[in-house]
Image (cartoon, rainbow, N blue to C red; front, side):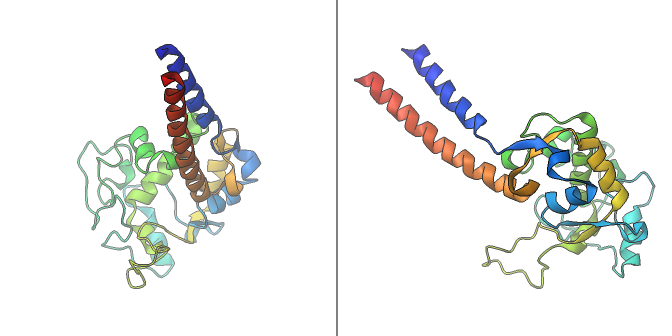
Length: 242
């Protein structure tokens, strides 16, 4: 009896996995780097061809080049971490073992325990936000997702584009949060390189590739499948109890 129950439960679980959100090659979801940067993150980023007025998600210089971009755009690199989720409240240095997001080591809004490895970064926000829900990404593609996560978590300049500022934030408004950004200009060549590296990898195609919609759909599907799974267990137990 026990093996039969396990077999049936495995079948239910397998159906849940198979019913996940649709997956397609990135080249079929986003025609170019512009669509990838602008659509994947629901308007968080803007594809900018004037590179002097665009931020980069990775750098090798000693000083953060995004600070100069902020000045160019009439902004001041902040001494506060305006984004709040896993972030610090003020930017500062991290220890020598801060290697995964190393460009920001000397002045960062993220902590070593938040970004110690690609695996941990991928798990930070829950299963609905994993970038590999459609299967493992190529190493070249995954590197760009890691860089974006480092940029979002660590760069103080990202907070300049928080969608709802502290001044306008209303905790009673369910549409408000302190973690979302909007309209941040990103270098066009960076977006193009990201698309090139990932064009053959599979990604969630729900709602034209919106990461936010994909996460919501995955979360909804998971709850539905969990409910069905529990009901199936009850039915199986009742059947064997007859």
